[in-house]
Image 1: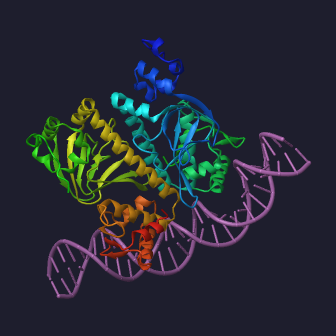
Image 2: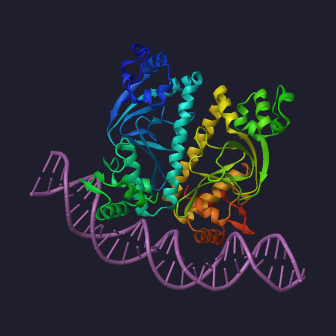
Image 3: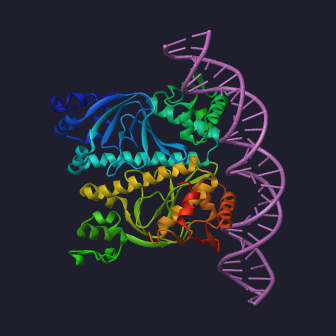
Length: 240
Length: 240
DNA sequence: CGTCAGCTTGAAGGTGCTCAATAACCGTGG
DNA sequence: CCACGGTTATTGAGCACCTTCAAGCTGACG
């Protein structure tokens, strides 16, 4: 744990003091007075899983920071087929700048805490603070890299490689770089979500998980809690 | 054709006068003196198809603007399987800011003209000119939208829908919004490239193309020239 | 204890892949 | 002009992987 120095700590809004978004997220670009201004219009809320954060119904007039939990970004076809095109974790920024939300739904995959603010306020601050736009660019580039990594998975990997890749992705995102060789975590997605993320059916996901379990690559408790004794072994299954 | 006014036209480098990148691309963010500075270090070149623009071998120390042609962004697995994760057209910006090129290869799909400049010069200008970073963010967001659209195609569409989606993508990018109901264009990709873009094999691509041809949705001449008499019919095949 | 959602397991079928042969295109050169 | 190799594309047959359909299982909760 590094101790972060805040020269004028008293000027930082109470709400923001311990917030990760101020350190690793976009709010780190803002000066204390901007944080105060922003916090006047911001609202924190805790929503249950399957809540829609923006999309069809809620035509997003707000941006959000994810404080805790996992958010899935979903695309849907007219006939109901759907694909998860991204997963977002704290302290990611949520919302599409400069446009009414593309054609994408953001939905809580788990219990999620967000800190939301009106688009208008942020859009104004973007104009005033180049550093803010810089952080947005950094995050967007990161998301683009992740999207392209996943395109390789979707287009060219087998079902079993896909499932292993998914477990590896979750392991590296929820377990904060803890041990290098093993991991233990709770799956933030249902089998149905995993299928929509991997471009598979739930049956295939289930079968591949069972196979990994029988082969001793993973241990599963209560359908959700996963233990990976050897991450290298999993990485091999993921064809990485 | 709109006539664009350049107040100090004489100050704009000769090379940049008629360049689309100055209007629709990132160079539009630069002031005349910056264009002059940049043009001192920039080189135009024309490269044949299959030339590597950056990637494994050429560890990119330059950024480029695409002046003409189509560039494919490719990811490759250790065992040789590969996936095209993006196509870029003029006047797109080429290169990954703030990082040594992810793990991605940019290759000319057709004959390509580029205007290249050292990363150092652009990186400095990014610090000086917020508008430049704004344009980069805009392009990155566009690429992210496209990547996510394509993830839906890769994960959830059938082979025949994939091929139709691909044709529709090319039709809308090379034919400059000409007619709304029909299109005619030359395919910038080989069957093998199309397969790598769609996550299919060349045989499947070929079969689906002949099926579209036999069904009267498209006409193909010389294996490369495609005519789409009715774009709506093609869109239907693409399940859009 | 019954119900319901989420998950697993099984059997059958289809879509897209593999392997293999044929066909078209294109430059070169006789 | 045609012959000729090399590359690129098409077509066919058989098979594998993943899906579909259907049933059974597990755990939470009334």
